[in-house]
Length: 205
Ligand code: C5P
Image 1 (cartoon, rainbow, N blue to C red):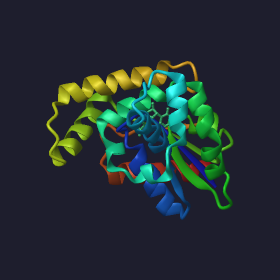
Image 2 (spheres, rainbow, N blue to C red):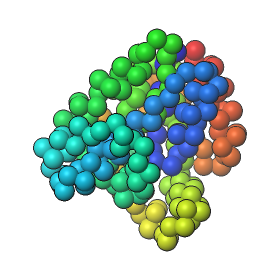
Image 3 (cartoon, helix red, strand yellow):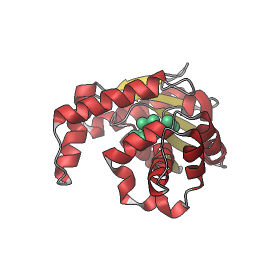
C-alpha cells in the first residue's frame, strides 16, 4: 500500500504521515528532509541556492547529513524552498523517492508533489492543510519551546512567502491532486487529525 501525504509546511502532514506509517506498519519518508539536505549542503559548499548548478551539485550530499539537527531550522527550510524550484534538483531526487515508494509492502511519503509527481499511482492520497495563522502559531510554539527568539508575525510572513514560492513554481507546484482527500487541521488536535487521516485512508483503499 502506497500512501501519499502532501501539504504546506506546519500543516501537520509530517505528524500524520508518521502516525499512518505506524498504524499500517509500513516505512515512512519525509521528502522535505531531502530538499532541506540540499539547501544545507549548498550553504556548506558556499554556493548560491538560486543558482541551478550550485543547487544540483548539492544533491550529492552525504547520507549522514540527513541526521543533522540544523536541517530542522527555519533558515534551512527557506534554503530548501529555494533549491526546490530547480527542475534539475527535483529530477536528481526523483529516483530515490520513487524507489522508496515502490518498495515491496508499500510506504508512506510526505511532501509537496507525492500524489502529483512521485507516486500518482498511490493507493491513498491526502492533502493536509491548515490556515496560515494556525500553522504560524504551531511553528511559533515549537520554536519558542526550543528557546529560539522569534515573533509570530515574522513566522507568518515567512510561511506565506514559502507557500507562495511552493505554489507558484513552474515544476511540481504544491496543489491538491485529483482524487486526494483534503484534511484541514486548523482546528484539530494532533490526535483528532491522525484519527481523521486514518479514516480517510481506509475509505480510499
Ligand atoms: O516540508 P518541509 O518544510 O520540510 O519542506 C521544505 C521545502 O522543501 C518546502 O518548502 C518545499 O519547497 C520543498 N519540498 C518540495 N517537494 C517536496 C518536499 C519539500 O519542493 N516533496
